Length: 224
Length: 254
Image (cartoon, rainbow over all chains, first blue to last red; front, top):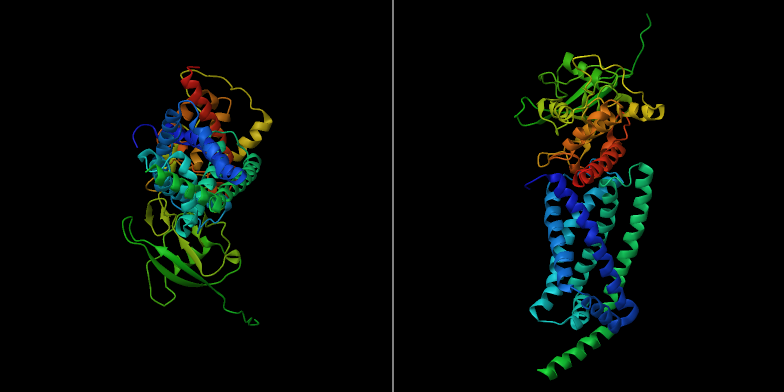
């Protein structure tokens, strides 16, 4: 990497919080609309996001580019690390190793997930309204369901543990007590956000999303 | 004189050896007679006196580095049963056998268990881990230090540059330029000193350049491994705070 690695690393760290951590929480909340409101609730949540002003601008500068920088530079950081949990099997060292492993898994998962959903919308193969039924198909495929469960847990761990590390790297949690309490808080956040994603993923398996898919099928067939 | 029958106890060692800096490492096994209160250094001295492997074949004496023999110089650091520590305070009675000795291979191996810790001393020079008081005239006494501060600063001053924290750190390796925990903690020590504080920005700027503090990945192995119990992760987080402040100060032109 060219330039001063201090600033690259600081940008990497900051982008992980703003916007990426905010985005993952927003994503969990939007998905959870599928649990609480069914197909209509999810559709409304997607419609709300699409109704945001400058939505394309937000998607490019608020999600896509930060994700690309954080992901690519993150792979470089992972490459620069040794994993020595065999020799030093302390909790924090495991978190260090898992942060890198979950980062790589998340990179692959997010790439594939964006290809299956947002990229298909961009290509015109599906509309935003049909994303619920896309997710129904994905969640009912045993392979993709497993892939999504692993991906979602990896992404959420990376987010929660990354927030812990951010607070250390910016000198906010300095002493061991502050760092320990922070680790409890972020592990609770990890459990809650993972549960939200997994419950939504389970909700997408429901027949009501299939009906929505069938209804859309009829709609598209008659339209065609 | 009455003859006392003593059970012939022995100690088994598996030592990773290397003949030259660029040679391939290999393992040799030794079995030496037990004496009470031995440490790894006295066992190595025994092997030096009689360099015979457990299969009865003669070999070259094992080389190691040691100096103070009271865990204040840091010279005899090596990996003992998988953990980096000082050989002088590694008591045989408290070690599981066979005792495995390896060099701290994060550093260049000179021969057998002897390593070159020069990168640590270069790091101290890089961050200017000293207090400049030389001048063309007598500068007089410096300001006094608060007792509460002196107490935690004293803990940081126990660092003996032994290299154990670098060996334990997953980010100190050949693909990474990370300076290591020890030098960062020394920056905190010298920045805490009322006279050393005058060069604070200079030290922080060094840690804000390539291979500086950003290399820390928070595995926190260093604080667990440090034989002197130095709060290395607290030092790193405190310097994270100071470098973050310094970054914003510079940006805003303060």
